[in-house]
Length: 193
Image (cartoon, rainbow, N blue to C red):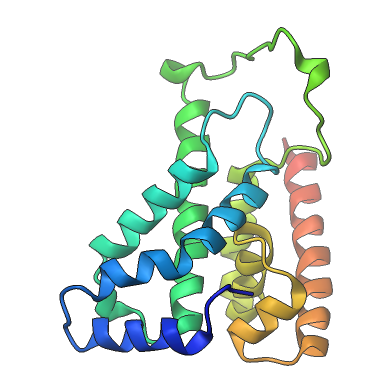
């Protein structure tokens, strides 16, 4: 999952928890490239016309993590879960801001060379997904956490299982259930609209 051994990240997190002032600075080089790949994968799910770049998303998420205090990260798993949540919040906030009338509301941006841009997956309504994910978290927090790691952090099934400390088979079952549950919720939300 990472280019650096888990123990390096764990040691820096432990130093941060112990109050070592430079620990947060040491953490960024250890996780930066991985967080950038995660952010790039996440931005693929955004609607066409998205102006946020992966580097900016990583920097904003990292600043939020640091301002929250490194002592709040218990371990590597907790750090990556916090990073996934920070990226999710940033993207949801941007989606809400763009939806407001003063920021273009219902207006649509038209790209001149839209045919040149490959779109691999249909765009996701992040606000509807965020609301459905909150409902899932109320029902089953561990499955919601898995969705955050898979969808928002872009981790593979195996990587997410490792971060959550569960088997890959359990992660696969939880992922299948959560996807079906969220799909059903999003479909119901669309029907109500």
